[in-house]
Length: 420
Image 1 (cartoon, rainbow, N blue to C red):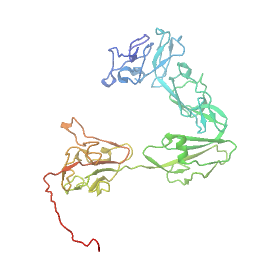
Image 2 (image 1 turned 90 degrees about the vertical axis):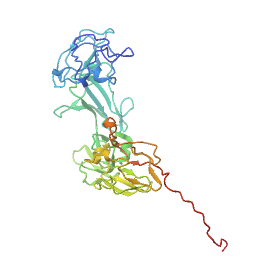
Image 3 (image 1 turned 135 degrees about the vertical axis):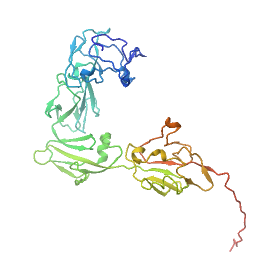
Image 4 (image 1 turned 180 degrees about the horizontal axis):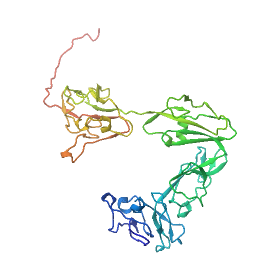
C-alpha cells in the first residue's frame, strides 16, 4: 500500500518512456497496487498495460480501479472521496509533487451533460453529449482541467431553464458547476421552457424535439430525419418498422407527418420506435457441386436446409435458424458442434473436379480468400473459428480439376442448307 508519498516513476508512462519500474502488480495474477494517499508525478496512460499500472483503493474500500486527477487546489492536505461501498475514506496528500501540483488516484464520478433538445447546441456549437470527470463525492471544479460546458442555445429561440439532474430518490435538482457535488455517475440534462416530443429507440438513446410552449400539437418526424440528426439513434442489427405511442410493439402506428396532440397539462409526448430484428443468412456452398447422402448437412436436417445455389450453381446448405446481430456460429448451431463442418464431412461431388482443400472453407468461389476452419487443429492448440455475424456469410468449398477424368473430343459435320 502506498500512502502520502510522492511516487515519481511509480507507474505508467513517465518522461516519454514506458516505465512500470519493476513494481508491477498484475491483477490477472491476483496482485494490485493499493493507493489511499500521496501525489504521483507520472504521465499516466490508462490505455497502457492497465492491469499492471492502474492502482486500486484496497479491499476495505471495494478494491475498485482508480482514476488519475490533478487537484485544482494544491494547498489541500487531505480529502475524502466516496468509495465503491458508498462510504468516504481519508486520502492524505500533504506533500506536493516537484512541480507544485498534487496528482492523486481516486474513485471517479462521470458526469454526462445532455442537451435534451434536438434543436440545441452547446456553447461551442457542437451537439454531442459532453462528459466531465471528477473525484467521486466532489464538484467538477475540485479537479483541474474540468471546464464548464457553458450555456447551450436552442435554434428556435426556446429559453433554457438550466441544467438539472435527478438524485437517488428521483428528485429533480438544479446543477451549479461550482457547488454541486456528485456522489455517483450522473446524467445532467438541459431543461427548456418548451414542450417536447421524446423519440425513444428502446436501446437507451432518445432524441428530443423541442417546440414552443404555446403550441398545442407537434408533427411526428420521419425515422430518417431522426437518424440524420442523431446517428446513434439507429440500432445495429435491427430495421425500423414503425413509430408507436407506447413501447408495446402491438400499439397503433404513428405515421410520419401525422399530428401529436398535447392533452391537458401535458408538456411531453413520447414516440417509440419499433424495430424488426435482422436475421443473417449463414450458408455453406458446394460451389457448383452437390452434397452426397453421407453429407453432414443432409444428416442434420433440423439444422441445415439444402437448396439450389443461385449464385454458384449446385447446392448450398443454409443454417435454417439464421443468425442475429453479433451472434456467434456456436450460438446459432446450438448443441451441434461446429467442428463437424469440415470440407470432407460435406461429402460433396462435382463433375470433373476433386476437392481442392480438405481443411479450409473459403469466402469466395475461387478458393483464395477467407480460408477458415471450424474444427480444432493440432490437438486443440489451434481452435476452430467461431465467427460473429453482422451480415450474410457464405463459406465455399474449393475445387481443382480432376486429372483422372477422361477428356473426350468429338468432331462431326452437320449437313444443312444454309441458304434455304
